[in-house]
Image (cartoon, rainbow, N blue to C red):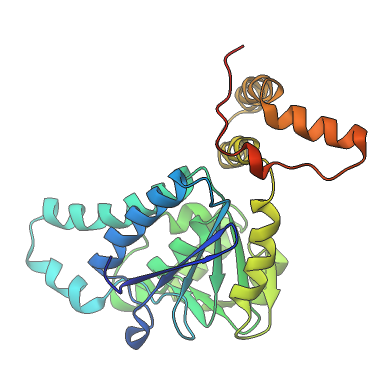
Length: 269
């Protein structure tokens, strides 16, 4: 692994840090490769219950490297599309990972950095952080799911203004709109994210993965189909040792021990 992505473990929480602070953690090819690899490793590691994605220094991510983006003008459209798919593959990998992924944002998130932050399952931000769909300022259009994510909590009129002006939104405003889960003091976003991550990491891993799947599908699925998925996953959960442990602990008036069940497969009904 190159130093483009730093990996640190805190208990059951894997912290992945974009390490390009001299360029405000602009995204590099090495970061793309490293993040895909480390998400897959965290997915397969039973010692990992949750993941935090953050940036080194005082800024989460400034988006794509404009020096690299400028070179794409000379490329054929198919080559440009391939470069774009690297970002989209990362977004899909964050969402498809069965472990909850929490963004810890210091300073700000702009362009593709905004997409990375909003792709995560939960978001913790320093109160002084800012968020921007900055593409219009350099003659580009949003990517990485930015407009899809933003449309989930703001009106079309607000989304259009934000994308056409590139204006910044404060973390406090996004918190009021429901897009930021927790606010922290400046410099404490990772610490605040660790509290949230440790809490969810102690939960039932397989049930949590099913819950993440339900939450991701809830906004794009008609109610009848969503209820069907809920029924399927509830049937799975009822046959899982996690449910036996959780229900048994409730009646015994003790804390459930879900961690010891992480390696145990679900037996077929």
